[in-house]
Amino acid sequence: MRQEISLLIVRVILGIIFFFHGLSKYMGGISNTAAWFESIGLSGMLAYVVGSLEMVGGALLIIGLGTKILSALFAIVMIGAIFTVKLPAGLLGNGQGAGYELDLALFAMSVALLLSGSRLFSLDHVLFGEE
Image 1 (spheres, rainbow, N blue to C red):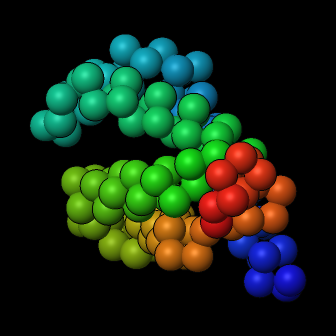
Image 2: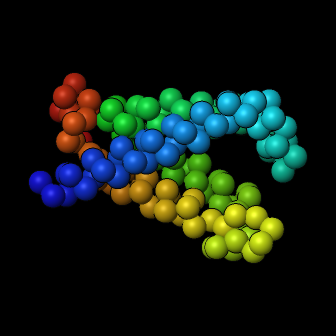
């Protein structure tokens, strides 16, 4: 039971963090986020995909719907963020940009949920009997 409580906490906190990261992309003007994506050599359309995934996926993660799929997608997003933006700044940053410590923690949380699932107070468990 303690493991399920731990996974519930990880799932809800991860969902909250991603939800607000996605929301901030839209609140700050998603077109601004798209322009920033383009400035670092990525497609601006990817900003819409990532922002929507973070916001909608974060909300779904909170209620435990699609936990393993969303966790896999969030892990991929974090790998992308680390290797396209954060890696040159180092783990804790270099004074010119944020480090990748938060991205690494979010990646680890995502992988933990991908591997273990989270049944407690989860719609996946209620609707499908899944972890």
